[in-house]
Image 1 (cartoon, rainbow, N blue to C red):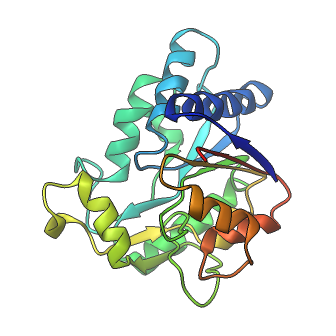
Image 2 (cartoon, helix red, strand yellow):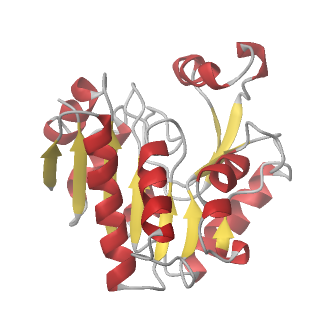
Image 3 (tube, rainbow, N blue to C red):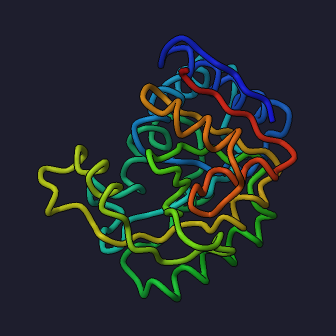
Length: 233
């Protein structure tokens, strides 16, 4: 596991973007696993700038996102499809047909199966970008008694609902369920890049150096052969 400590969010975003850009340069038709939330916004801004400068191209890139809220359509401003379009896809030269986010408006069980099959058919991610929750969740894999193997529907914990409420007008609007890649799906990525901003140092260090237990979902990354962690200590 490669641990990179940075001074601030700007450095974190640039380092993460450089790692993703290098992946694209090395393999122009990469399958990128992407994440949402506040942590990767700066990373996406840097990638947009790199694309506009002609340093990278998303023309042949395919993407698979980690998760989506249940009950939100892609044109809802709080959906993760909307987030990705706004922060990345609409600003680079990617074919939207090659971008994939779970469908939050269908039957959650069937949509989970369909998305797992889709990701598998693409050979899983060449590089999977992850954030980390205050409780150690990756994707929406919350602390529990085992590591979920495949894409599934999940009930969000109160702590995650509270953390995500900053993005909604009121906490009552925050969805209580989501579809998320399973831990097994994430671990099948060839490379994993975990980024964590201010206030996450304790959970990052617990995940990186503590016991591998499903009560700290990110701790499973210790078992992956190619993980880079970029965080603010």
